Image (cartoon, rainbow, N blue to C red; front, side, top):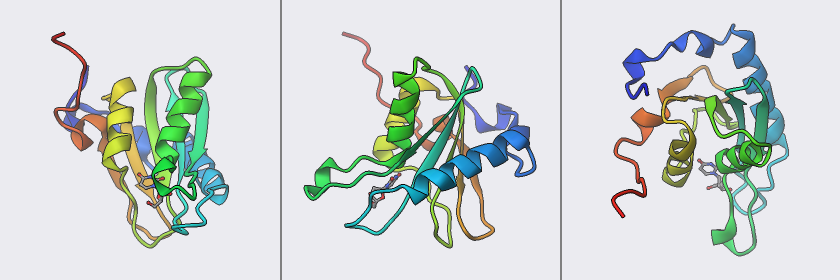
Length: 146
Ligand code: THU
């Protein structure tokens, strides 16, 4: 397993790679569907599964705030429900001036499925943040040693 960002082939995260622009469009569409009446902070995520299929998710909030589910986890759960458990990339879009990296809970969920996947955060400004799941969550929790 590739654990180091330096070993990863970043070429597909170039904004002119058609796979990347499809993921960005999917994340933008998902963000437009966010249910975020409490925070007014819309997030969209789009995952590229190993078989080439794409899954989207938005954040879904609740009046009982703690029940809110982030966009990244909703996208991953869509992927798993469709029968895919490995992914190559996830793009996170927020309609903000700066990109938004995934929260800690989402990093743990991403780590469950593909530590070598690329994580790209895009926004309405020029900055793009690129990382890998392994780099965002070193030493993530694994249920072992029982
Ligand atoms: N949110 C996400 O969707 N993804 C993250 O990684 C961080 C936060 C959502 C949850 C909530 O609806 C809103 O952003 C503000 O926290």
